[in-house]
Image (cartoon, rainbow, N blue to C red; front, side, top):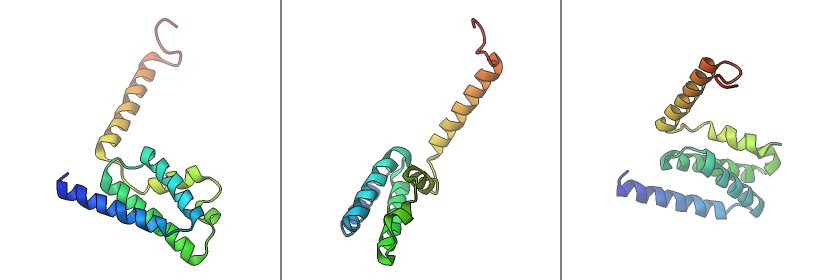
Length: 121
């Protein structure tokens, strides 16, 4: 990533933060909580994370403008809401490869050793 791209991402994040400050307190607090969650579970690259945050705040801004309640936006399960939102943004190729590698490795181990875990059990 170039210095120019990093600077642009920082500017975009500042614009996001400024937009967030314009939300009513309850929406802002909810967005903060979802944002914290996305830092642990969202795309690892800055561009996709910024797209996710831009889209998320757009959803909240639209809800406020339309008078939609926070409960109607998020639903009964905030984790499912956040996870569903995150699924719309691709993970970097390296994480997908590592997930496939882990799955393949564990599948090979369990197939080789059978249901009891193999030798010595």
